[in-house]
Image: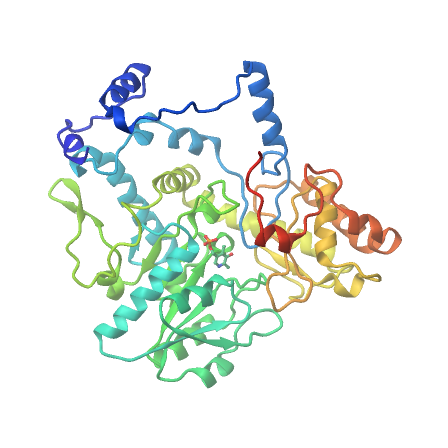
Length: 476
Ligand SMILES: *Cc1c(COP(=O)(O)O)cnc(C)c1O
């Protein structure tokens, strides 16, 4: 197959047709063909349409409801991105095609790398990683290989206790031991405290800016200084880039290496595990370690360079999750530099508006101001045996997707809200009204209503432990 595709003329892109289907079918050897009936039900077109429409209605989605899932940046996804990603010119590509026949695709990826460099202040990017966590893992392999190359034995990585669980998991998977750093009540890191645990064994510290409580790391320059004086590297978890895009850049704050969650900040429908993309950006001194292949220009064409002897190698089949890369590229080009900055500013404004409406009624541990998200600590408001989980379930009955709950771990009964930039004041107001009513009124006056929720959804309250341990995945 690979050889055949390599012989296709430059620019060739097969379009789908029934004829080509029949032709391909004829080429499949008889002994490899299915000989059992597919067992599909015989239904009318109307029944089929109703079946799928009703299935889609059983789900909560951005197209039906507000989705304030903190840390996940569930923002508006442009329809134009979806349409472009579905163009035959992209969907019919084959990963083994000769690079001469995919020059346009390589150009898009090359330009996306450049745009991400400009947005983040890094020098080089690799687009291969399949998600944020995969970007973290790739970065930690790069950090390990870098220290090996300069013959320093550094075996530990510092992770603040406000970090996302993927941070310590990725560092452990890459072979590092974790040193946990107790963060301040607003999730931030004090340089003095950091200094105390910065030993010669520390390879890196992983920081999320703004942190998971929605606070900007005020001492980031001081942190960068003490980390670098110790010979360690500074890693940026880019999940919260939506708060600062176009305003400040991780590269200028002193970060050496980072990932971006394209599906979050740069808009791809995601949830339930994907699809994602977690490009890794580095300062120039780490470029030799980035995964292969690297997209480069040789003469007047784009080429895939596999000759990088210090590279950590290949982490994913082929070149990355291309449809997500493409959607991110469309998003960046549609908004432009001003639009991206405006998106971040609106996201921060929306979050602060909601925070201002909540903070006199429900406890907010990280105070008066936030970046693009904030965390409620409603425990003190619960007069009965109500838990945050009950509040989240009750929200489903009121027509909302529930926010992130029980994260970050440093806030008891946490409810983490991220409105994003694309929601109206009316939507924010009605959500604040409903959540406040549940926590302050219903939890006391009708606690059983919360315990029984949800009753308006396709599936009622699940035994979550049982569902995770013994999932029933078949419908028949
Ligand atoms: C989402 C997230 C991650 C992990 O990213 P995935 O793309 O889900 O793998 C890491 N850190 C933070 C703060 C996040 O919100």
